[in-house]
Amino acid sequence: MSGLAIRDLSRMVQGEKRPISVVAPWSTRVEAGACLALTGPFDSGPRSALRLVAQLDSRSSGTVELVGDRGVLEPSEADWAAFRRRVLYLPAFAQLILCAPRKFWSVLRSERRVAVRTWNPPADENEAAVLALEIAADLRPGAVLVDTGALIRSDVLRRRWVDAVRSVLLSGSCALLVGQDERLLASVANRVEVWLDGRVVGEGTPETLLGAAHDEARLREPR
Image 1: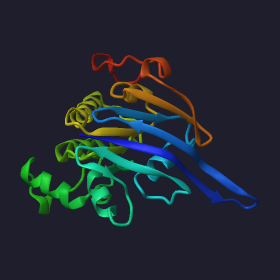
Image 2: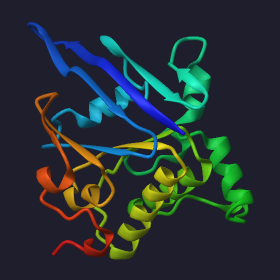
Image 3: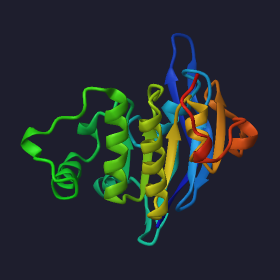
Image 4: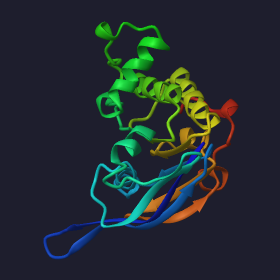
């Protein structure tokens, strides 16, 4: 069982005239078996914050730790590889090559009985995103970081996505989700942070902040 501890994580970039804050100092914690969703207008900060947690962009300050049964794991120089093995990042459009590819191929071969040499990710980006999350659930990582990307319109795929996230949580892992599909996020998140201009401007339950029921039975295709 693992959770994420994020303390004062920030990113500044140099603008033409002065430094620009991409992510203001941000602290949060996601407990084992819990799901935190980050949402807000396009380019408001959640996606940049997720990339910082995944160690894909350089941070100006702060720490990210995976805390659980195996102790505390921080992405320092010595623990970099171990951190990346335990924290899976699923980018928008399910670019599986970025997500611990050896483990993905292994699961596809052993668990799903798919011939690796002939298998390719689905052409449909929504189906690829759902499949990537289902594979991540099989891997039982310490934490899963998910950029939900485009809106999933198929009701069947939406339910598969919800089931996959819940499988991750039931295994004792935690999940950090980013997206703008509020109804989808509300169906799995325990807590939501709303972002604007690179900082958190609201925090609470999905029912309070997103106005959507925290219940899979009410998850329906958008009209």
